[in-house]
Image (cartoon, rainbow, N blue to C red; front, side, top):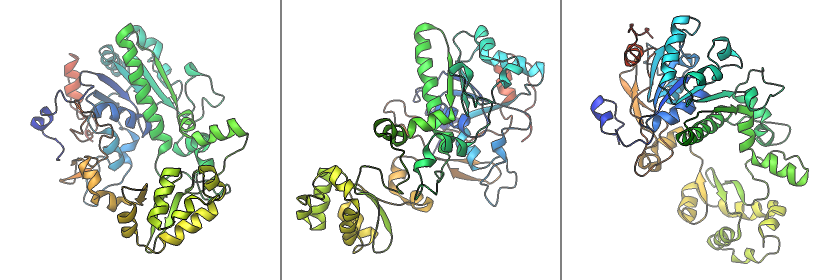
Length: 410
């Protein structure tokens, strides 16, 4: 289904997004903060992106199409800032700080990911803003959190995705072996904190409906990654053992890995008795179910080399397409999709996971990741492209009764 871009098309989704009427002031840059606020914008929140005159640093990051001569922003910025409006404010000036305060007066939430102390130096601390707007929910995302949530010895350290993945434990269990730690290929050190920040913001907003009081939501990138690295915590807490990478396997589960086909590789998971029994039947090896080496989940893990030997002896005799026909819908199995495969797969089209928006400077539309949470009555939607720098400055200033000024050119 085409994504609405015109005013008329945008109007067609009015009332169908659950956060309409919510206003969020977005002071974030890079990926973690903008990804958080994009989730709110997808569900109808009016996210006002406040940018410095030079713009969000992510605007200068690709990928760019070859035909994009203006390079107003690349693909990462487009994805993380769709559905938002942009206003340029120079918070180093008293006049623009005053504009921000006026925006905060009518806001429900504010999200920022500055280094610790920056907002205080601007005179825009949580305490100052909450005095003006007691119901304001104030969310910060920092590498090691804010002192308000617990003073970290690393509180002043800067951080990127790879730092969060490393110190949050994810890299210690990712890769082929313990001597080759590997960063997950996507920016999980940013997007996982963004998910927690969006969740924390909405939790605080729900409470504020009852109390009429906002609160501070403190999210640390490393904490967020740790919270999703369940193997690290659970293994050490219960056994005292330090888990190490198992490649594509998951400790305690077999078969649960990639397996070789005649013409490629697929992922396969049949670690529990019902799945294993079904797999053995399809392989024509029902006797394996009674084999004491494979009779229980734990036995299969302890004898995993033998498990993979018998499974791959069968999978290597079939192509990937044949394995999908034989196991698809019966035993958990999936081909390893690259980008081209994803764009061609009917699942993602049916689920509207690749909506298209205009890409400035190209004369064409580009896909962005769609709305993952499908609400039955008030579905979210991607209704507009990411904004040009300062594109809505005049519009937003007019809404607060402030003297308008021309938007900054991008």
